[in-house]
Image 1 (cartoon, rainbow, N blue to C red):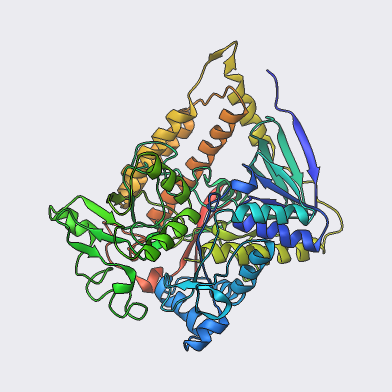
Image 2: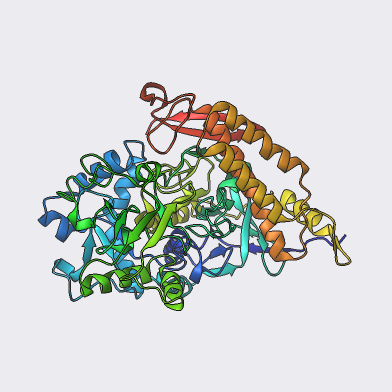
Length: 574
């Protein structure tokens, strides 16, 4: 049996994941030291949640917010109470709010356009309402933000090791000593030995059935499969909030490209939500009564006394997004925003190809699959410097746990902070530690690739395993969550893990097999945390057998980690 070849690399700082957080961490680390390696599963120019663009970022804009009577403390408290419901890492959210505008100015310095002649605001910024009770979300030309960031990464002297999936961590005497990667094209095992590691691989997507039925037809990047979270858990890192689900109640196009926040988000100012009778469910943003102070509405999320799901259940569906309203200027603004957000440019291309027009055609919308991101904020528990519970390990962006709603500014600011913290830590170490941890990945790759001989495959496909994960996670962890349902889901994942014999014919398929390994790991963590947390908490966590919120016992981050081969739980007050 031919064994996977090993290639070794040595650096001071290893950044795993090339999204917004990983790129910013690499840039800052490259400014502080000349020995940085960025490991990315794809090409960082088009990887991560912002791979195809992002048109908005919230922050504290002093000239605007101060003039409107909003202080930095006001914004931080608004986020803590209204976005996070009090359950948040307060040191990190303050840091994000304090430094977000600095990182936005970095984007401008890298070449991203953020100022517009038609704006009447100081600095010519286009600011909108979004998460907070003030106008502090910047709309900008972000379609190619990853290209600008990647160019800055290269300019800072960072070595980019692309087409390599982060598989596990190297450990030496209880300290992180680097990372293990697998080449998605060269098929080699890469050992990156480092004095400090920054994990920034993002969210565990691809856990739940996509509405269109296609494996990769999800709202956010399907290449994000919880690789960092799974690797950290196997190394003994404590993960929090893994039981929480985000995006409850969010709808998107049913039969088109996903994303964009239909009919709001990038589809404002024209977008409205309608039932099949043409009655307004969600009005245009500027038509919300006292939008800003009362933007969540008097009777429902939309201020109309109606919700999408209630209209559907009342027999007044389907539900549509109607973007035919507004002036030509409104229409032009919407198209610009859509073209810069996520898969919006693809959405517009498909519409043009099939002769569809926002002025003439409504878009049917439907609830999207759950996600473990944004309001869920799952990942390693970190301190105020982005350090995890194992020395030498730092986390940034969606990788880090405990900061709901941090999104784009969270990625940029914590990437920057994690880099400064990692470089400071690495400076105290005289030699690069020679850690171990590659054996499980090496053995898995050798076994999986050996099941393909002479043109014949003697094993299971990753596609079948992915379908099984979709079914298990959707059946036991979405609509009906309880101890017995989670226990059954845990049993199903364990059975899948023990009985599947994955086979790979090439490095590309082997990469997907490693992703399956990580998705199963994340799913098991989620089910165990679901069983442990005996309450319901807002929209992000609902258990049928514990329907009430229990702040006395469960207003906490629920941590889970491996200790001497056993799973242990800890509660952490925010």
